[in-house]
Length: 320
Ligand code: AMP
Ligand code: MG
Image (cartoon, rainbow, N blue to C red; front, top):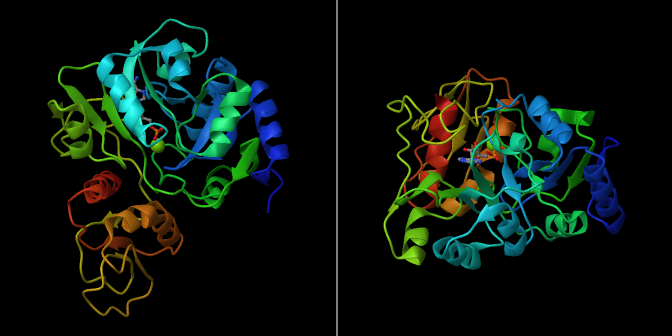
């Protein structure tokens, strides 16, 4: 294990707080993916995040808070937003809200926008971290911009090694894909990124129309949200979708147990055709297969329902 990786403990918590206060970067596990966290009022630290990820400056960061009270200091919360927060927070729903002028979040973290993306993650360690810091943290996914998201501490090590000041190894993330992003500043409200919580669940809670994301990226010339258009989540190996029979020089990402397959290498997202399990394994297995140095990674068809829609959206963008 390299020297900047620590397990969760009281000591590593103290160290993480100190590092963030000193404008350093700390990689942390959220329930969705690993985040590359910095203190959100520090221009220096935010610039380090963008630099390390090689993330375009126009792509804003998600701001993580530990309470609705803290969210209220940096954003304007209407009744519907409060309902969503009470239902889904802590949890994998990020809300885009109008920004409130404050000195807790630097303009750089939100790419100078008048809006801000906020959520309360459910990891106890991260909540304690924000609580002790007494400030929000900005945390994009802990991977090079455009590459497969990190769902395990080893992925962060692979992506950044000792260039991250501290990595807290909390094991694999629970969900394996990112939060759902819901824009509360538009009329009707709009899903800007498919995620763990699906559109129908949110619409039901709100009891009103919500515009879903149209993810036919080949047709979209302009992104409907910053950072949403580019090829993303992509392995270095070319990716091909909806393939049942791999060629001999392919790595195979399979789903379900309908056929007997002796192909090597094969990883099965879920032999029992469980889409939640498939989401949990998606980035983890893509990273594994990307290391096999094969001609292509080919992926079996994934049912397009529930979190399967999120999986297919990630795969389509990765295959662009
Ligand atoms: P990630 O790097 O996976 O954490 O991605 C964060 C995503 O949140 C960005 O790519 C944007 O699409 C979205 N986002 C963050 N802030 C805003 C904002 N103010 N308005 C619209 N989208 C945002
Ligand atoms: Mg990301």
